[in-house]
Length: 157
Image (tube, rainbow, N blue to C red; front, side):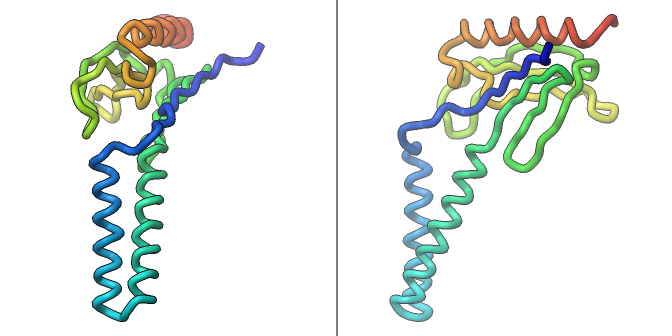
């Protein structure tokens, strides 16, 4: 029988939040103006395209985070790194009400407690939160699933 696998990704937004749109517009306008001052219309157009490419890259990086749950453990993929935590290395799974940068009020999020080196760290699982799952009850259901898998896979204490 194949090991269960579950991936939590961000739901696709219908539009970008207004602060992001404003930041992208500023980057493109500034790049265009710098190009216009330094070499005319062609350089300005190329600078604006470079600004758009930069914005697209940043957007792609921002949408990359995810949590993957497998039979071996939990993989947490953030913008710059992927960290894997084996079930035996996880000391606790719970919830915390935390705010996400630029996303408004605090939401319920699933967290794991792990020891990295000699320090116990609380790791927030990307996309396993009330905003992505729908509501606090959905977070509680996912928490129950994760705890059941953790208790089954970690073995005896």
